Amino acid sequence: MLALVGVFGTGIFLSSGGVLYRTGPAGMLIAYLVMCVVTGLNQIALAEVASLMPATSATVRHLEQFVDEAFGFAFGWISVWGSVMPGEISASAVIVSYWTDLNQAIWISIIIVVIVATNSYSVRFYGEVEFVFAMIKISLLVGLILLSLVITSGGGPNHETIGFRYWKNPGPFKEYLFKGDKGKFVAFWKTISSVVYSYGGLNFAPALAAEVKYPRRTIFRACKRVFFRISILMIVTVFFLTLIVSSGDKALASSAGNAKSSPFVIACKNAGIKVLPSIINAAVLTSAFSAANLSIVHGSRVLFALAVKHQAPRIFLKTNKRGIPWVGFIFVVLFMPLAYMNVSSSAANVFNWFQSLTSANLLVAWIFQSLNHISLMRAMKAQGFSRSQLPHSVSFAPAAAWISGILCVLFLLTGGFVNFIKGQFLISSLFSSYFIIPLTAGLYLFWKFYKGTRYLRPEEVNLAPLFEDVKNNPEPPYENVTGWRIFTLIWS
Figure 1 (cartoon, helix red, strand yellow):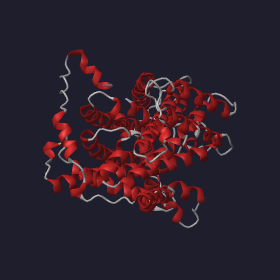
Figure 2 (cartoon, rainbow, N blue to C red):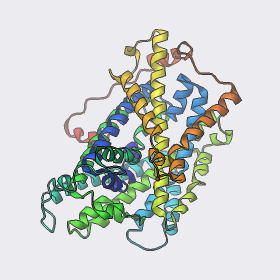
Figure 3 (cartoon, rainbow, N blue to C red):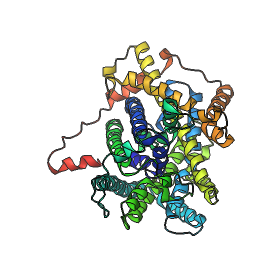
Figure 4 (cartoon, one colour):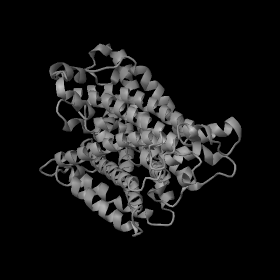
């Protein structure tokens, strides 16, 4: 449920309109399908590694165990960098501006205070709050799917049947910068970064492995179920979105920096539905808030994990009596005021910068998660361990790691390709698309030379204790889900 909260934020509810406007309904659906496959393959690879070695701040620890300590250091601080970027807080203020013209600084301040309060007591309290938000979010998605079906079938107040009209006019694909098929492909590829942002948070489940009961079975099942739930809801939502809003609607391209450009709000207004846009925005606000909440939890846990490995100041090891790493929590909170950058005439641009920076961070994370699995497989082969000895496995996981890793590298390297087209260069766009590459390289080289770490050969990876722990500490199997409990599959 925490991963659901993290994924279904402003990416699908707010910025998806820009994707539709840029590439058209077919281009949008294909973009989301491609990213669904990439993240699904990556999720499978992550699930195998995390179930063998469940640990707080999973990918950081896995990189140290299977690849190189310097990579763990680099990714750990990249994760902190990603957590302190207040993109979802900025988005929350953008959503509130739908109802009022009051200065966004007021709403940003209120949101920051509520987030601090939610995270200050215990992880159980945070979990219960986010569970409620996740249920609201699932209800919103199901409601939007049904609403879309009603609107496209002519059940709105204006009784206008839409069907596949917008796929025919203005057409399934749109052009960008160039004419013909080249322009359609450029438009499609330009939207990849926004779609990546929409899938952010998908791989969060293993990060709290040390704080759950029976971590191996829990993490593996959570990774699988999260992927299927998110994929089904995301693709169905996107499909219906392409039916109810025209990709030529100028409101989708609004740069006013408020939620009036949300495609679902536009669809409701076009159908003559007056009250529902405010209800939708209220639910979307909880989505943005909870996604911002998740960043605080993730950032503080990563700082704790880095401090355990002496890769961050030892003060980040301090926790309160309920186990909250409060120093790391305060550190992340100190960066929240960056959201006040949104209080300007270019608020939409600020949100786009945060979105682009976050997308690049996500791609680096997925690349490292694929690298972990590839390194694990090489080490197992070199040391004589078979895949049947893994506590949980999926038959095609080795291929999944390679495919997702290669595609994520391609997406990262081409994320800012528009800047290399004549007349399209923007320093802000180039920075937000590629800053993560020199940052990662700099952090990696700093720790490598400072500590003298080395890339682990397959035979040097310490696998024996991990498989010994699996053997000595078996976890009980899940009980069969029968009767009324079948409904718990929605959230369990």
